[in-house]
Structures are given as C-alpha cells and as structure tokens.
Image 1 (tube, rainbow, N blue to C red):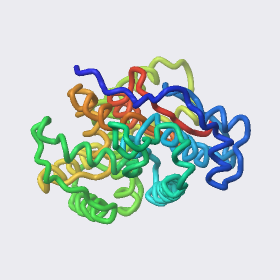
Image 2: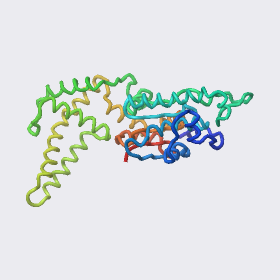
Image 3: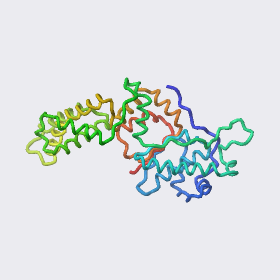
Image 4: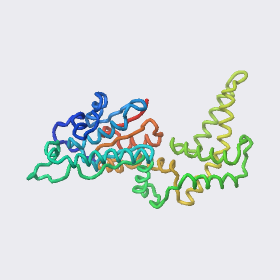
Length: 323
C-alpha cells in the first residue's frame, strides 16, 4: 500500500484560535473549544453534550488549520448526517474562508501565506472543502469503485418512496406462511424495509437472523420451569422476524434485477469496497489530508467499518459526537 501524503507543514502555528476569532470578528472560543481547535494533526475524539457548540468548534478547527497553512481547504473532508446540517456547515466554513481571503494586508502575516517573489505561488486558501453527508460520500465511493466488485457504476439510488412501492408490491403478492404476524400490510411493508436496512447497516444477512433464532430456541429449551413475559416477547419477536426473511430476500432480489440500491445497500457496499481494496483507502487519504466527522455517535456499524478502512491507522480524523 502506498504511503498517504502528509498534511502540508509550514512550521509552528502562529495564529491562535482567539486571534483567528478576532480576525474574523467572531466570538472567542472557550478554553475547551480552543484546545480542540488547535489540537495537533492526529486522531481526535471530541465528546460533548447537545448545545455545547460542537459543530461551531469543528468549523473553527477547519478554518484554523487552513489559516495556519497546515492544509489547503480542498484537501479537507467534512461529513455529517443530514443535507441541511451539511449545507449549514459548508456555508459557515466557506464564509469564514472568504473573510480570510479578503483580509488584505493581514494575509501577509498569516502562516502559510506566500510572499511575493517566492517560488511557491499556490494559494493556501484556494478551493473549498468537500462537505456532505455520510450517505452521499458512500454513494460517491461506490460510483467510483463499483467495478472493483464486478458491479456496474450505473446502479442508481432509489428514493424511500420507490423503496416502499417495491416492498409493498412484494408484500401484496406474498403467499407464504405469516401465522406469527398479525400486522396490516402497511406495517409488514415497514417492517420488511426496517429489517432489510438493519441487516445492511450491520453488514449481516438473513442467515444471521436464522442463526439467532436457533440459538434462542436452544436457550429457551434449556430454561427450567415457566418463562417470564420478557422472554416470551423475545421469542415471539424473533419468530415474526424469521417469517419476514423471505420477503426481505425477495426485496433484495427485486433491487438487484432493477440494478438499484437503497441507502442501506449503498453504505454496506462502500464498506465492502473499502475493506477489500486497500488502494481505495490509500487514494482517499491522499485526497483528503484532514477529515472531520460530525454526529459520530449516530454512525452505524457499516459506516464505522467504512471510515476505519479508509482513514484508520493514525490519519488526522476529528470525530465529534454526544456521549
């Protein structure tokens, strides 16, 4: 595996978080925020509760790294969960970078700013960071690397409405055993989509659910005497889940026949590509020298596997989340 390019280092940082805030006419960070903003370029986990300014601190860290010449904006990747959050984060960062670019004579004093007559004429504030959602990033990775898994790059992502329509047709046409399920067709459709999504997000398949059922049956049979209501509920839920498995399999087959993916498939496939093809991670690490992950507590197992395969092993990742 090739060694990823390291961040651009231009000597010790000379512009502190408080100085940068004053330059950009923003409120100065708290001591705790300043420690995160100016932390070394190494893996960093930031754990804080709601309303503590985590997203603001992450944006300030990105701008601080750029202002001190430690990374160019277009070599930074920022991920969050919703398109709204990604848009707000991008707007916040880009407006501050634009203020840096307009700082005029002050730019001459910023670390990493090229002086007239130097050989390096690259704009240290040039370009924009890549900011988007976890799912969109997984989708780009799949589009770029689908052929590595023998899949067509043209496979398209379907909307939740189309996923529902496809699953509902399968439920309506199904004539298999359903004696453990007393729900309406609409509830069954929702349950099929939820189970299919959970399997994808946990990188599991239907055989794993069946194996759990066999284990539960053995444990149940070994219990002495009468079982309590909690255990009965677990057994009942498992039996209903097992009767959904043929529907989940038909839903997967229908997507494959139409060459479409849903959000769960997209993340699972991206994780598979990243895990099986180390060169993909090498390319992403060279492309993005700094990575910032927002709302990290909400990532699924598949997203964890994807991010660890791409950016594990000491890459400068700042992960921000609630306890």
